[in-house]
Image (cartoon, helix red, strand yellow):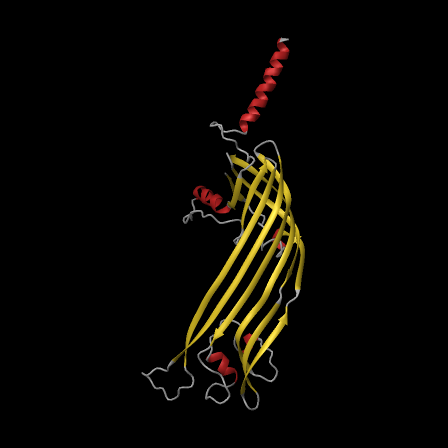
Length: 310
């Protein structure tokens, strides 16, 4: 009888020890519970910061809250219960910028130092929008601080790009100094792919040109991604973990419309022409780090993360 009581007491003590392992000394639970929310941040800056103290790195940069990947995808979870979580992610990226450049007026002649030629203003307006949404379901396993999880995400992504060029100098076949390749390359702002041969304008019979405006059609993508991962709770409701994914995605690029100004021919004349190119689709089946449809665009890559539950 005494042996039985001792065994029961020992079993109770062991189970109680394991139970206490999931609760802090203040009675706070380590693991997420029903109704909890979670956000994840890249743990690499924090680990580097601590590690550099021991490595005696001269410039130890303070850690920053970088969300899960470089594409500004913010992900969060809502726990239906201790073993089930709903995942939601959103990305809204707007990149609007204007570049201006001032070039000499090439129509002016006879300008002698210390006089300076008049300036013409060119501008380039670049507008890009990226919008992404992901929803998913996560199932969790484990009875200790080490938790495994798996599930799937559905993703949708859209993007569009618009560029508009305004040139202060008119190119035509009658103005001195504004003919041929020289006109586009020396009297227009070159933003990388809008003047001369860089523009790739493809106008038959024209020797030079520049882009007036360009719209990259609305890109639209869909993806389905399976994932598996694990996390360890170092403090109550604070864990370090990561996940790996594998998915299929399809993206279509829409149409690219370009309006170009060109000049050339035996009798140089200025011509404006609109060009339309249909962009193809992109079907990918691969792991996160190699999948541009379901990986680097929307999903978190296989990185170590710090997860905060509240």
